[in-house]
Image (tube, rainbow, N blue to C red; front, side):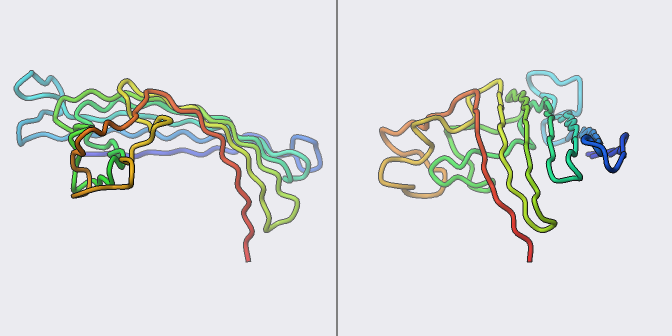
Length: 185
């Protein structure tokens, strides 16, 4: 079972003012699995809980006749069993290959949260310059650290397989600055 519900509300619209629009969005996700050795809730060590609950909330402000946009937001998830957690691409790992470096066993804990701030400059209708700062954190090492998740010399052997003498550099937090330019034709 899974539900993914969102609401978007524009709560301010005053063309001609310096702050001319404002809106927010809220998304709530929840779901679970049962059977095959897992339970939706009330799990035990032999039959662990396998569920997901999370939310995201963002607030967007438009300034200067919609030429500047500022978005602040973030979210949080709880996902024991990691059934919706994307597998880090350690040594080329995919969802179907798995990897011994990051397990996805029923009952494996995973909690995470993030916050972001995005500034858009839109000088023309079809041009956007974007700067974004993201901070993400997890209860277990999950994000690629400075040492990366690729073995020296590149991915080796089967996707996601163990490489003798290699340990991926996974960390619990990540700060990221993204810069982008979008031109629509």
